[in-house]
Amino acid sequence: MTGSSISNEASVAHDTVPEQRRARERAAALQARRRLADVRAATEVLAGHVTSLDDRRMREPSLLPGWSRAHVVTHLARNADGLVNLLTWARTGVEHPIYASDADREADIEEGAGRLAQVLHEDLLASSERFAVACERLSDSQWSASVTARNPVPFPASAIPGLRLFELWTHLVDLDVGFGFEDIPADLLEVATTSAVARHLNRPEGPSVHLRVIFPDGEERVWDLVGGGGTVHEVTGEAAEVIGWLTGRRDGSTLRGEVPDLPAWG
Image (cartoon, rainbow, N blue to C red; front, side, top):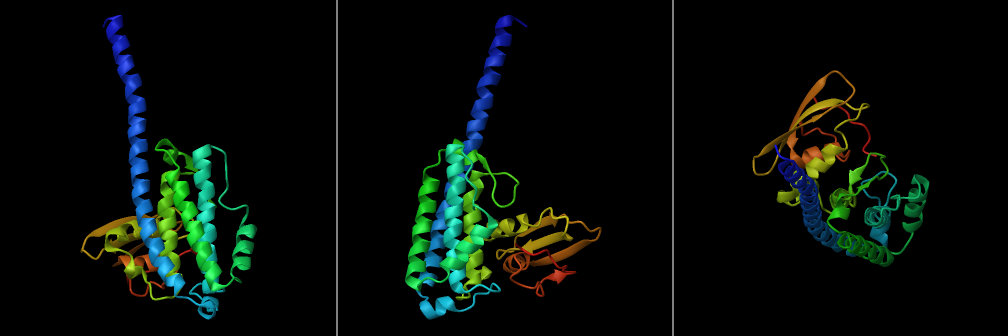
């Protein structure tokens, strides 16, 4: 092999690696932007329900113990701002934690829950817009930057729109305004199920579960939740029921198999 051919091969390899990285970045950015469109649609559904709540109904209990609907709406607004912090981290490279602390997060929610319904609605819309703008500012490469949230495990910024989307769906259910997990668009039920499963994939304090999920079109998908116990529980169910069980919003009584207790969603 001549020196020239070695040099050419090295040049090709050198050019290929950055191009492969750029291709991965483009793919991640495209997926994030597609998910952002889903976030916008879910935000419109949420806003429609929140607008219908007057001051009295806003003070009524949500499905979350100890939280009124006003607490849920405030949490969704502060979650949007917290995710803006992570997007800023991805864009600038300077660490911005999602919340200053858990205590500050809880205090902000408690304080904000006392506001009038109109103010809560305006806060939700404004924070949602800040989130959308922060997403739009990221370049392809910045979507691949690593960040961390309350859990110290790093993840790519491209996952953030998906996190927001699942937050919207879950708390729409918690508002107790007639929206259920069954109302998640059928073409996004697998996305929602994947998000719910992710919290339980590797939890030493939880059970091991071979989970078979059935989607509205008849398709099935299987996940293995790895817990700390030796027994593997076989559980089967419809997607909406599975999501409700995994998130602690339903007791799993409609699922088939030996349905174990799960750790708190938290």
